[in-house]
Length: 389
Image (cartoon, rainbow, N blue to C red; front, top):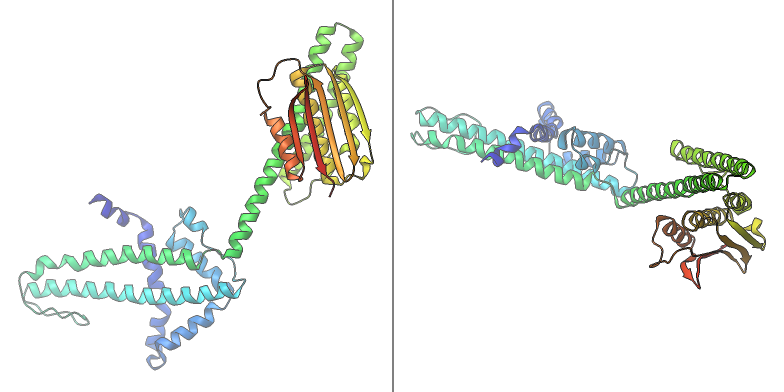
């Protein structure tokens, strides 16, 4: 019983009924002004013309959001569009919506009025009174048992109000909701946002994670060495790495503040010397071999290649420490090859599944390339091939 009465405690139940009543205001006024011109065909033509106006979608959308879903409509409110009609399909749906709203509004309003008249007639005839004028359903009487039946039409009217409110809301979500093209555009926009957030997360992981790893390794090496000259070089390297990390962080924050502007100034493979020197300053013995025209590598591939190299060197310092590492950067045959090898300092139970290695594989996949990571003849290898076109 409580569940059946719950809809009547919600304000949206009554605003939906009001929404249907508003739909018949202009036909009622027109009927009183000039009854001769009032016909169903005339109303249909006028609604058809009104539905073709692009701004009508905005007006009806705001009404539906406010009265059908309420101020706390949540997901339903977001599904109703409040933008002008952009295509003939949108205009056609608006025409159907206006006519459906008018038809349902006339039907519900007349039913509620007639059910109210029926209740008054039952109450009147139960006391041997006269019937109220204007009722369609004739109550023959008088009979005393009409009194107990008097609340029944009110119950039916309440059910009509609740049921019609749900029905008009379902119709609104179907006819005032986004078109397939708008849904596709919204999906693409959400996808772009997710990809951008993922890219920013990778940027933070690669740049800040690399800087912190280098700083920790250098600080530990300087403390263990006990050599003032080595300590000075380590502090200088930590300072340079920290400044580079701050620059990367500022670029990422710029993306967050100005998401509509393209990212510029990101490091490329032309800046790989900075990575190699940073790793060498941390104690790693890095031997680098660069062959081919690295400067001609397309921007997106060069930037992602820099991040892959950065992540690979970070993993060397983080997991292997100050060990010899071989780095090969080769541009040949329309392909960029990045190969990093270092000795294993501890046995590996299985293929790497860390976030850094996963980021390397994701970057390679996004560019249509491939990446292999894992143990190889006593060494740990990262081998990435990226197409240049």
